[in-house]
Length: 175
Image 1 (cartoon, rainbow, N blue to C red):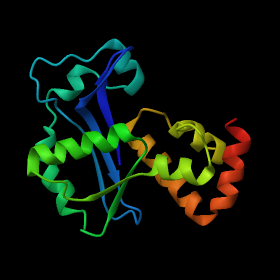
Image 2: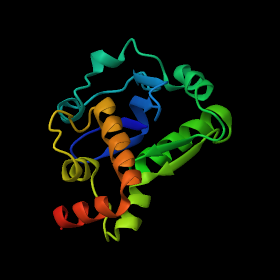
Image 3: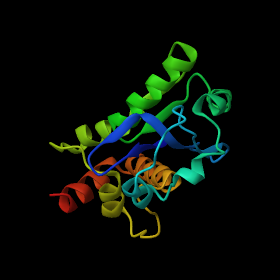
Image 4: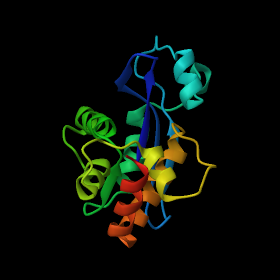
């Protein structure tokens, strides 16, 4: 899963999700949607549009998060694990689930943290930097909600195919 938020050059509003993408590992389910912020007076900064490609006009006719939440829950089994890259996405989806359902209704894992710990990194590596270290794919665009989810899915796949090989590549390229 990946989320995008309202932001400007100085701040990310982790309370305001403006895009979501969830891709199943077996390619049987995909949920990709822009999200209309709850605040009707929302603004999308030029910085946010440049970063994500999302403008205010793109969000005006989109569903609110609570409107797509049921589709998300209906397609996630109790034993499924949702992976995110970073604690911002983890905290945001946790808060959104609590606000809607009163509880977290699925298992969510910060794969960035698991990856960092296994590789023995003293910092939280960026998704695009890790993806670039592991692949030759230059087509995916960072901060595009679907591209970021595809990157996370590929990093996860490569990691579980050869943890030590991935660790060596990343350590050599992310110094």
